[in-house]
Image (cartoon, rainbow, N blue to C red; front, side, top):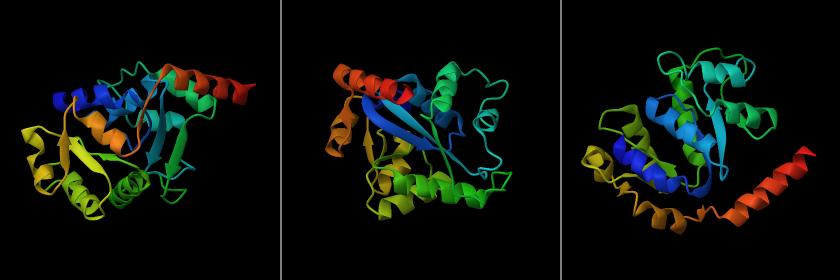
Length: 195
């Protein structure tokens, strides 16, 4: 987790949209990060149907005691109320549960939609590892951290980076570092949309 957090210190400096289901502890930390910065946007990708999933229920499934602390909640609701938060689902609109087949399909679609895929951890035999192998075969830009704990991912050809080296990879794939000028321009655009 520490190695992933170190990478995220660099990743958060780029203008990006974060897309995911945001369920595991590591995913919820990345989800929180996506709401923390003005240069990032967030896409919620649910395995439930959109007749049953709401912005409120989405949070309830992820932040519950003892993990209910969510300092970015005000920003979450601000974005939701201002149509700055996108929720997707490929599940039947009436689906009320997170079915395994929907979760796997959602994860696959999220990776296919992404310009760059980050897999923080995925040991051999895990569902994450299986998905990582599938993504790597498609030659999508994918990376992990360079720690020994990610050796199984490195062995299938997934590049490992650290806080100092990930920036060059992101920029090579088209990511742009957020600048004050870009943040001001985005603030003006959002203001114009709200007026």
